[in-house]
Image (cartoon, rainbow, N blue to C red; front, side):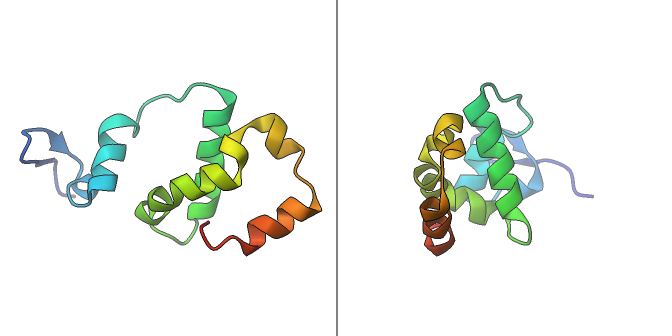
Length: 95
């Protein structure tokens, strides 16, 4: 397994984070760090579920669309979703 890659900024990163700026930002600011709050946990759980079969980069690129589609991952809002919201989510090409 390859070791860390040192970027132009002098920071060592995992090989998967050395290429695309979205991966690099995620690696540097979120990956491996604890998350706080219900909305943050719901967001991570949802993104992980949608990631199945896709690259994490694909999900990170769609993250703004996920946040919009899922009401900012507000648990009270998402728990109130009904059949119309289900249909809306299924038809949302952004997610």
